[in-house]
Length: 301
Image 1 (cartoon, rainbow, N blue to C red):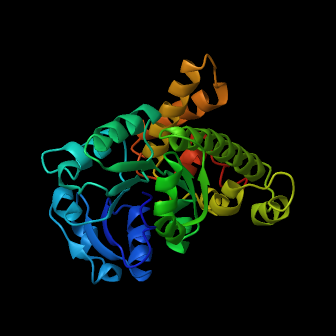
Image 2 (cartoon, rainbow, N blue to C red):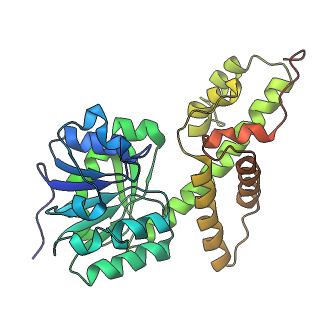
């Protein structure tokens, strides 16, 4: 028998309160859901906009009595720890509950998590998101889903709080495959914007005016709209960590290799990101790719 949609008020656990997870949790709380929250550092659990949520010391504690668990952490190992670590949520989840994983992990990792949870009578959706911190705060993320269609419909009331558009691509793992494609596109667009900014600055052009003119034409992109200002100022406040995007490109390149494809632009951007990480910029926004190109001389700018 199909289970009822998880409309508010749902007893919900959220594990992972980083740059995306925290605003997602805040929006779910504001929508009327009852939240139990946990994050590895514990500090974000005290955020004033989470007043009313129950702080939990472990993922297992957070999962107690919950109808659904939303996970938003950094990689395969972190999802494994959340679900199956010493204090993992997996054994604590009730039969019939649902795990919604908004992390970006490998498709095979998502499938492995689903299999282990299904053996306990718990369902799983891989639901990675895209749209940056701006989208997370606005509740307008794009949600890329893999899993059973009935599970997606059950989760839809929750996903509609965090996302402006929700897309279903097939079984578990399909959402992660689409997210890999997204990150390939992000790699190319950010790198292209970085090169265009560098060229314009070396040509001594009025770059604010140039960007404003070009973003409405064929060269327009999310990266040009939202990250060109950071590149022009050479300051990179966090939107999406470069080191996480580098990890995502590894997933995409592995998928390409398995399919017999070479992705030379993606591989080149991953190498640029590695060089920036070696310089200590792994925690900066992906737009720090501008740092791989020389700045215009102060006398020429």
